Length: 375
Image (cartoon, rainbow, N blue to C red; front, side, top):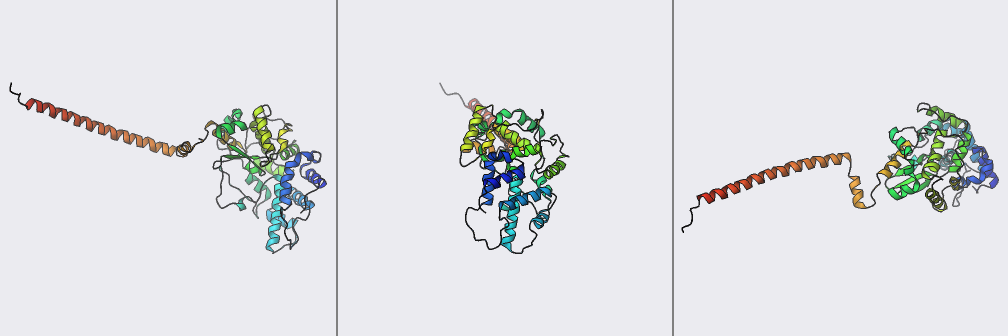
């Protein structure tokens, strides 16, 4: 498929985000759009392609927005009513669905299929949209609300000044990797000491504008209902959107901090990262942020970053080896070993003391039994 024209991009911004007038802000979004829809090399297409035009992409995305309760199989039968047994055609249709989901909600619905069984990074396991699974259930699976230690999350938010980007780099030697998969936001990879950051801030702002009239205050039990309601209204939950943008523009890259602003400018100018320039535009959140704003989606990941700053990983190999082996089990083992060794050497000291006393006694007795030398 050829690259989208300006008019086609304007239609996409209008239909998916109601942001036709802000097309200029979506430069980073259309980078991923072009990479997904425009092949980098020419191929010979024997069968008709599932996506022949940019209107086809809009059609798939709008159909998914209208019927989010459909399973993947039901959705596929609606958008591709002509069944096919040809493997290449089936793969092409599945790819078209993946592209539509990615462009509409910035979710990779085939992420699990590209990794080996049991793949995990930083406690995160990729998921995919299964054939018999409703789309709303899939989104619920992608963004679970599961905060293991709320107190640690509150501490991280309270001490958010320690989580500025340059402090993470300086104290914990952390690198930043942009991602277009919202599910990977704030994900820490301990192997490479990398934090993944969702880079599509124009996308976040557009969805926040769409959800401006929806309530943000909700409990854990209400979250699933809210996700369903939001998808019906073509947007992600406002709590999720607000947490993501807040973590970028208020915690990692606060505009009032000069070092953070320079750091953000540098990674935007970096051709490899291609971070969204829109992140430099601090336009607010289109809704008031609650006074006691808490993280329900990214709380555990934020607490992890706080732990990395307060307990930085050693930069040399010996220190890293000590940290890897400094678990509670190893600590208990060392303590028990120390106790045993202390008792053993204490026992040796007693034996040595007895032996020294015996030697002294024998020496004294020998001196008593020795006759005096003749004068």
